[in-house]
Image (cartoon, rainbow, N blue to C red):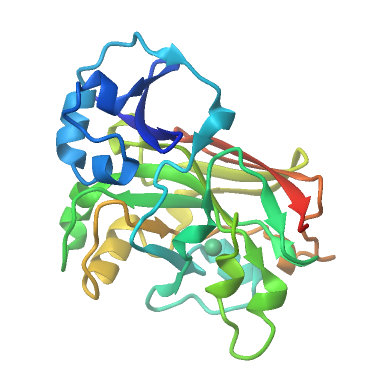
Length: 281
Ligand code: ZN
């Protein structure tokens, strides 16, 4: 049965029906309240959560924090959609192009995004959440290590990214608030086809990205095989799997996020992020 894992006030929650169940309270202390510690026992938590009845308290999505607040690792994958590689005028990568988003950038599904310059861009992305730790995981077994998927925004300061040659990806994508994720980690059994989800990004109601995850160059399973061949994947580790065509920096004319604008990111079956942009103080 499908599980939706969320974070309210840094306490692990399950979304059941239209309400929240506090994991530590509802399990009488069997599971810890800390979201990262709860995620570390994912297989057990999933089995327990599947049996919950839907007598949960209603909640306001705006109060949710990032469902995975302090992962050990946050991988980003560059140029992982054919449509985006084409619009950027770059060759299709032969192996995954990996960068880091440092975990300080993670915020909740309705958090504000603080613009660091006049060159900040949006990137709607499917985010993979690792459940079961592992090393050298084969693609054929990769999804057994996935807790679930969530929606993400790989917010990017292009001025910093392309300040010099070669470009540097990690810092321009790791500024505080540059990683909205949520609203929940959703298990793959909730999705009709986890390899083919519609994803979109609107800015102030205008659709700027619209694609399907089946257009990815490296599938989720292939990314896990590649990454786990190099480093141990831990529960809670995140993989931002790349963005499709339509980002602002390769549009003609170019367009960047402005204070007061609202970014709406939606992925089929996972829910939506609604993030308002504000100027840096
Ligand atoms: Zn990205």
